Amino acid sequence: MKKILFVGNDAAFFLSHRIPLAEHVSNCGYDVHVAMPEPADSPEAHDIQTRGMCYHSFSMDRMSRNPLRELGAIWSLYRLYKQVQPDLIHHIAVKAILYGGIAALLSGHTRSIYAFTGLGSLFTHQDIATKTLRTFITPVYKAIFFPSRAWAIFQNPDDLGLFTQAGITRKQRSVLIRSSGVNLREFRYRPEPEGDPVVLLAARMLKSKGVCEFAGAARKIHAKGLAARFVLVGDVPNNHDAIPLEELRSWQQEGCVEWWGHRSDMPDILPQAHIICLPSYREGVPKVLLEAAACGRAIVASDVPGCREITLHQQNGLLVEPQSSTALAAGIEILLRNPHKRKRLGLAGRRLVEEEFSVEQVVHQTLQVYQKLFT
Image 1: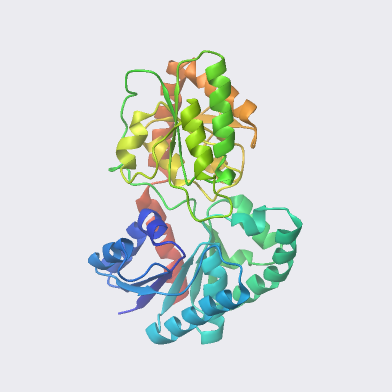
Image 2: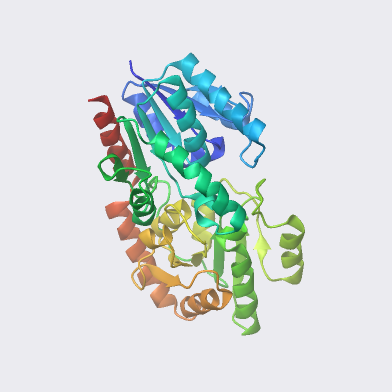
């Protein structure tokens, strides 16, 4: 029985985005192990274990930039790889790829998959400190991808092109698998509800998700006297980019937006909306837009990598200029004033995910990469 170890930096993300793949792999007869920073007695770890998978906790702080702590994370993964002795390591997301990749090299485990869910601030921010860090980190990534049995998975062609053109990954061992897929039985088409239109943004409350632009667009729409409720769904993570709690609360008191916090019942939440927004600055392929399209909802999203993969302008949604509350408000206004257009775009979105983004398709494509590594 071959042993597969999934390594990531967020157990909740693994459960929401990768559990269908892990369960399918387990059902195929693989011995599935999962390594995340959350402690073994956390609710997420318990959930993973109840699905018949071995859970391992390792030391990593997603927000730390302390060199000693970062070295400790690499050492923790190195020891884990030596202990588990996996046949294949499937790394997920930028930081886990970096640290897990170094640990894999040091421990001699070269049969690895590195799955980018987006590029994160390391590759998207342009401030001097980040650019300097990127200069030092890029050669490390190149070393990680050097072994002949290392494959990279990207969710959109922009990210794939950036890495291959920079010589970090090689075209012959890089593959495009657009998104983690959507469960079409769980996220079903439902007609729009009665009442004032609801415009919803579901994401972690980060500036880079366009949350501030969403609040600005809400003010502009309200100033025009258009009836609409603007709703934010998502938690405030431990992240340098997070929207301060007091700012979210002040928006609520102002009547600008409603903030519903973290919700685990998204198949019921999304159909309550009439329009789904994601004014993000950059994405892999955002799962919430796939789920919104599966529910038959029109989308307004930033014209950026990732969002463009699922939002086809004037076909199932509208793409607007990024980082502009004015452009976002204009796109939202078009759909608020035209319910027939909303319905047409929403139905087209449902067809799109059925044809191209089902979770079954993504699992099949990923297993094809596994087979290449095992042959």
